[in-house]
Image 1 (tube, rainbow, N blue to C red):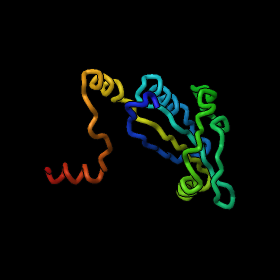
Image 2 (cartoon, rainbow, N blue to C red):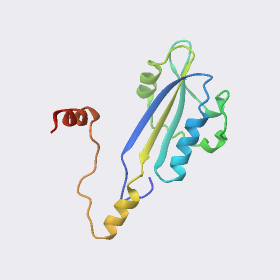
Image 3 (cartoon, rainbow, N blue to C red):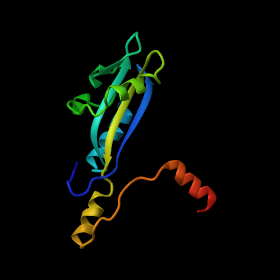
Image 4 (tube, helix red, strand yellow):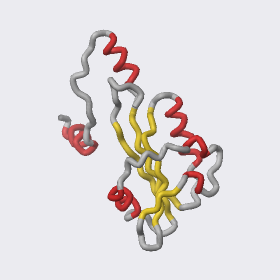
Length: 143
């Protein structure tokens, strides 16, 4: 994480693709956000399943037809945050011929603001996420 004092929310995304899909544009967009300091990548996993349905962790370099990106920039980003249960849950959703890309990341978009508020004498009282269903319900009910 970028600073020990202020950590952003940690979240994940998992997308399923045809195994020959071009993931390059999305990976480029991810790298752009990293370079801007908006997110910090904690783990990136490429997952497929074997003939028995068991998860197989693959290297990003295994991707066919990825354009517009040097996949070497992702070397070493696999941290192993996802455990066997996570991987099994992911492959259970894959159809034959699909792969999954899982990204675990820290949202750093407010780190600079938090550091500035701290420097001004502010003390962080609370931080956390809001459940999307609760947010929708509150907005719908006008609460």
